[in-house]
Image 1 (cartoon, rainbow, N blue to C red):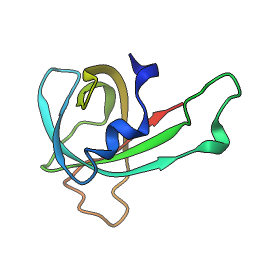
Image 2 (image 1 turned 120 degrees about the horizontal axis):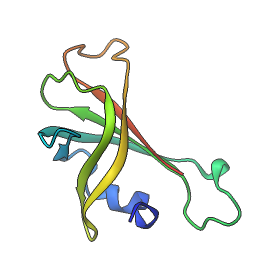
Image 3 (image 1 turned 135 degrees about the vertical axis):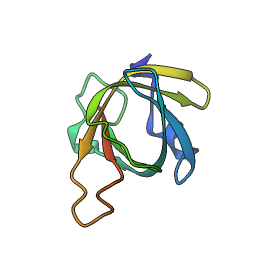
Length: 103
């Protein structure tokens, strides 16, 4: 299923709130902050252009990283998405800032 995910699935969610299902099954409200294409990272045998998705939690969280699930338009619930936390770096330190890499 992860190989079917493209940046277009996240375009609809850009700047919209959506629930991120954490490894413990709880839901964390997040917002898709940005989508960045990484064409220089593309392998010749892979048709998909690699991309990163940056998420921001909409409430305080202690979640750091792990395999999560996210409801994506046209695909439904996609699980086994590895989400990793980034440092706040001048942003609200009570919120979580996350990155998803799709190669």
